[in-house]
Length: 307
Image 1: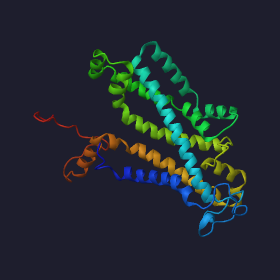
Image 2: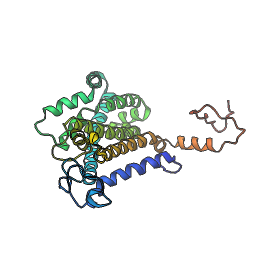
Image 3: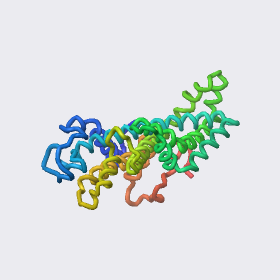
Image 4: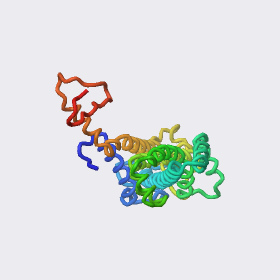
């Protein structure tokens, strides 16, 4: 898998995601105060530098400190929930699509029921019933309620792959069930799994922010969603204290936008023909006919006459 010839869109998305990750990893090491330290009064405006670079919030705490710690918390919840949802959906889809029969019917029925119920409703109901909410329990709840569409897509692909010749050869050679799934089916789904995982991470971050806006966020950590919750609850929008709600909103937008843009451009990483097709379109002469937008020319096999 070569990264040569990738579009600027991919590199822009990669740099944006890397920036956000560095903010979450290195930001807490660079600020001089913690997210719970009081450094000023109610909604002190931003100053030139230091802990008051973005002013203070409703409790006199540093907004810049809460921003970097909140970014790290949101990324942790999103990554954990995204991995859980992707792994569960992958396992269910692989077993259902490859095994078939009554097991496929049962797992497909469960998947369809899960898809019919809005995930945010289930997450809210489960979060309300939790005796204690922290970032790990929230990640687990989000991950276990967001795997259904991954399972459906993986099942469709696994059902198609199980009829291919190399799977029949592995089956006839005496390979076991899990061995066939791991060696002969899963490698053909890796590109989709990676792209699905990126989408799951971005969706989990949005779910966590939604829960936090409703007052159901992690009780032991600061996240971007909890920053917005307290900013709205204490009237920062009404009083004009923009520094309390604009930074977390911008950071949340950058995270989700970067992940979605990265996911949409990952096709070029896993499909070299898209890069070659873009290169051919760029090298066409002005008088050479160009087909409709979005359509690639059909390659001509060597030794045959073009049709």
